[in-house]
Image: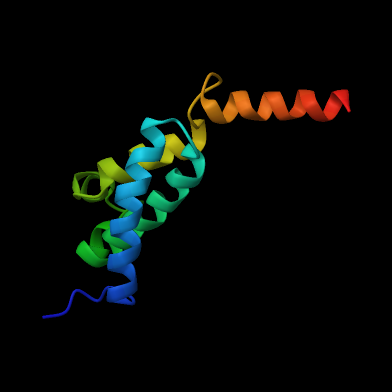
Length: 105
C-alpha cells in the first residue's frame, strides 16, 4: 500500500525536523512567519496524501474540507503566517533595533 507521498524519505526528514525546530521557534517567538509558511506547505501535503477529495472540495463542499484532520493545523499555520509573533516578539524588537542602528549610522 502506498500513501503517494512525494519523495517519502526526504519528506519524512523534512517534516520531522520541521516539527522539532518549527515547534520550538514559535515558542521562543523567533522566525514565526517562516515556520508558518513551512507548516502550511506540510499541511497541504498532508491534505493531498490523506484525503485529496477533501482538498479538492474546498469550494464545492466546504464541510468535507473543514472536517478533514489537517484542517486545524493548516488554519493555525495560516494564522501564524499572516500575523506573525506580534510586535513585542524578539524578531520584531531586533528589526526595530537594526532599523535604529542603520538610521543612526
